[in-house]
Length: 285
Image (cartoon, rainbow, N blue to C red):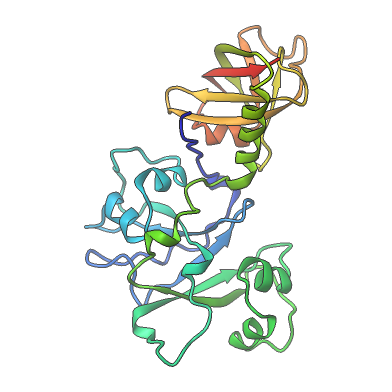
């Protein structure tokens, strides 16, 4: 089966200042600042601004990523690696790559500081223990806080990132931006296929482009049973996703040419630009 190529939802996360730009000789410098955000799937991500002399391929290598993994986190990029100067590229950062504690051998000159900017709904406990797996007192003392009250936009120093980049051995988990959630849908589809018949369709998919992108993967379909999982492929982008059917397509709400209605998250991750686009569907009955 084709490897899942899942495109990160740029519009659903806030990249806070792409300060880690480096220069023509380096991708990361000690004077740079890395601002980490955590998306709805638990990925830690920062925005790298491309500079003259940098290439998409060497950027991937610097941060320990295979090209297809970096492409998966950047839906507007193509395999030829072309980009514009100043373009922001999203880089996934495994938690283990962030140095949380200073040892006697710590040398500030070979690290860039990593900050997290507080978002609405964040709590001190969530940031310290869930996001960055560090003691509350460590985060509190490092940022010279008198209490654990936070405000949106507050910047917290959470650690440091090596100027040498990230070893590929630490990036093994960052090959699928949607992680376990999409893998569970795929597993359900594959397991159900062992005892149900698979059907194929191709035609137009529709999605509401003006709606904000969430983290739900659902679809409306006329033939697939409600509650079942369908496989959707955009052959133009060579990307495949899975979605849960939550209802049939309402009568008269859409034209007969529409074979599936997708949630914005599914459509955008498939690389859709227009409200209608061609897809291939596989479903089980």
